[in-house]
Image (tube, rainbow, N blue to C red; front, side, top):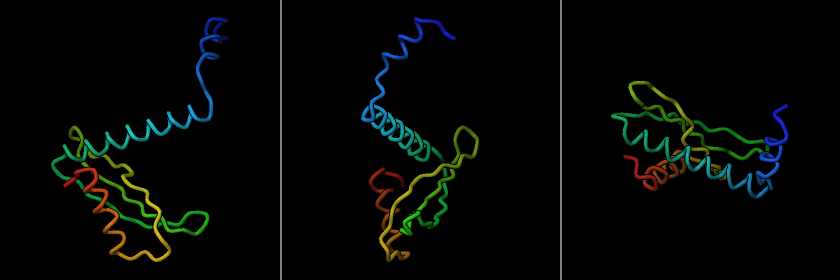
Length: 106
């Protein structure tokens, strides 16, 4: 459809499992850094905390952040963290507080 030149260029792109995995990890790190920077620049933000379970019945802590970005309210998943079988409010608070301290979010 595009011609032989384009086929050769596409075939030269490395697509091994490790390359794809590394690129996905790089993109997720970049996305997380972008969201954290936007939260830091926003005059205010709020979080919504929820607990869910995965297919193996392990609890997952979900934190959704809402913040102002260039005069528009945005909403993004900030944290998805697996919890132990016994998850209390204190455990959830400590996980969120640890994430905020690690990423220097007030």
